[in-house]
Amino acid sequence: MKRFFWMLLLLGATATGSVQAEKADSEKPTNVEADQMAYDDVKQINTFTGNVVLTRGTLVMRAHKLVVSQDPAGYQYATLTAAPGGLATFRQKRDAGPDQWVEGQAERIEYNGKTEMVKLFSKAKMRRLEGKKPTDEVEGEFISYDSRAEFFTVNNTPSGETKPGGGRIKAIIQPRNDAKDK
Image (cartoon, rainbow, N blue to C red; front, side, top):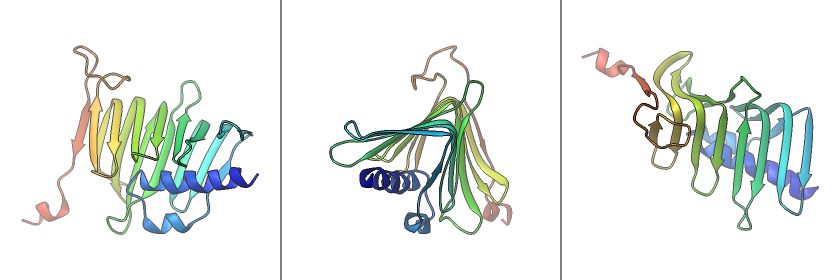
């Protein structure tokens, strides 16, 4: 059981860094609520199903299913899957200033704790907010976000490959407040 609790704590620590997290979140406990949980100690896989809600400080992740695995080096990998017809979501406060948030949604969200990459698959959307007002939004079938480099890639197919005729991506970039003052 100790491994299970450490796995939950590590998941929260890695998920927190994936979205320009508020630094204070790393000191908060991780809480997971779900209708069911299964843990395979040999394979180091923890599966939560049914109305899954992961909360750690300002980070809130919601999905139908959450699968967490750990490699031999201790890195965590998480996959959030939506119920049919739904979307998995996350929301977290950013350190960029007061009332700065980032949120995302997709049919499937994957997080790689080793590379600190977040990938959103199918009906993917991410946006930054000042309070409730969106400042930037990106939308497509696949979004890859490198939190270390703060770099987004948006593609028109769920596989992450660009395909002619595969659909269009959408980006909305709002003018910054300091640009309005000039």
